[in-house]
Amino acid sequence: MSDDKNKENKSKEYGEACIRHFEQLSGRRGNWEALWEEIAQRVLPSHSQLFQSKGAGRTDGAKRTEYIYDSTASIALERFGAILDSMLTPRNQKWHRLTVSDKSLARDRQVKLYFEEANQVLFKYRYAPKANYASQNQQNYQCLGAFGTGSLFIDALANEPGFRYKAMHLGEIYFAENHQGQIDTAYRHFEMTCRQAIQKWGEKLPKKIIEAAKTDPSRTFWFLHVVKPRGEDFDPGRLDHKGMPFTGDYISFEEKCVVEEGGFTTFPYPSSRYTQAPGEVYGRGPIMSVLPAIKTLNEQKKTVLKQGQRTVDPVYLMHDDGILDTFSVKPGAMVAGGVDAQGRPLVHTLPTGRIDIGKELMDDERAVINDSCLVTLFQILTENPTMTATEVIERTKEKGILLSPTVGRQQDEYLGPKIERELDLASRQGLLPPMPQALIEAKGEYKIEYDSPMSRAAKAEEASGIARTIETVLNIVNVTQDPAPLDHFNWDQIVPSIAEIQGVPAAWMRGLDEVQQIREGRAQQAETEQAIAAAPGAAALANAAVKAKGK
Image 1 (cartoon, rainbow, N blue to C red):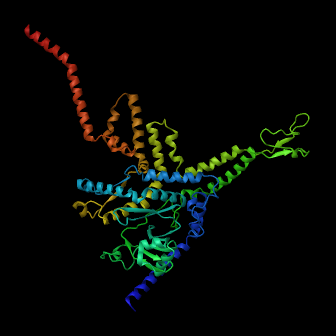
Image 2 (cartoon, one colour; image 1 turned 30 degrees about the vertical axis):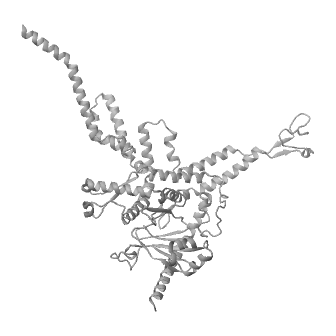
Image 3 (cartoon, helix red, strand yellow; image 1 turned 90 degrees about the horizontal axis):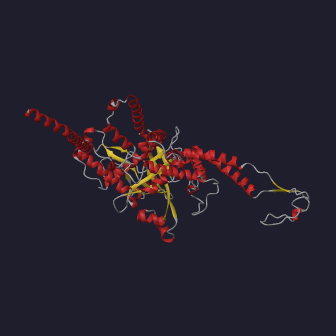
């Protein structure tokens, strides 16, 4: 058997094995797809019809809002995505920094400068126009809120330095966990036109697709992107894809053969779950928790709309005495026979239910939905603008307590692996500065410190504790008129720490050296003022001494 034929057979065997594994993963999540479709129909209709049927029968631009009578859940989901984006990954500030856990290395100036520059590189290329990070990250947060699972594909730009991001729809990506509960396997089942496939792979494609491209470039074919830990063929000493710990193979689904072999040194699909039930791979989001409330609210809205229509355009009750032939409800109409000889009305409206009760019931369901999507949590400061600083810190602490589970999970499962992937891509493209010798000896050890508003809210307990303590001590000072209890506070540590927790820009705060200079100047000024104040007395004493000596 020739080498080409042997290679083709191996390609077929590997392709068939990957497709079988994919079909096993697909077959195990039928219940999930039914649930996701139900949520999409009522909350995120743009994602509807993309799960169980893989988009079959879906028409682009079709109206898919027939299940939505009340838009509270859809609006709450949009705000949920905006809240996570602004609180976890705000575009207008550096929401993380790189450092080392070794304190001696952390004090090394060259190491500090290296990590500062590396951090700047990540933000520069992450928010570059071609990266498309902001929109894809926002879409990922919406999927996290609606379906409980979000995934982002991160890869290098094709023809220039940089990164590119793409939010993965759950209808086309399938996951598997390792023995530690971490997602380490992803199968992406996606569709491409012949033209797109030719642009990406050219002559590597099967002949069937190449021939189809000549007659119908818009015809679509299905492909499979297989990313999983490399097995027995992993060789760390090799420089090609066989030396990478993750596969990155593309397979033609129809032809069951490998189109492109590849690999990744880091997992390219950082994914997160909002919450996770025991034994389940996919997560559960806040919208899942309030799906009964969303259904109830839709039914209540239909009922209230019916009652409202009856109230505005009521049903009339009339005695059957011939008035029906001349009865009119047009403005300005004159209806003869509408009253009897004594002026009593012969026409009445059908009594309707109480719409105000319906609105109260709907408001209850809306509050539940908004609470689940964190909307009401962030209305505190706007609704209470006259709060004192202590009250603001206390409310921020309460937010931090409620947000801690969300913060921790997203940092561990999503943001951390994402930053690791970006660092890997930046390193492979030569975008990072030269590593200092001290860090090379430490084998490039680093850690990520998060500085987002949500992280600061989670740390607000420290600021809340010191604020309560200061308030208590001030009460003691006011009662005793003795300022000595204030000597226990190290203000040079307290003030900068509170400013950092509250997110005050560093440029707005003076450094300790500047503060010390101001204090020294203040002390000198005080000494000068004392000398000036004491000058008349000293002069009088001197004159008195001179006179006494003259005598």
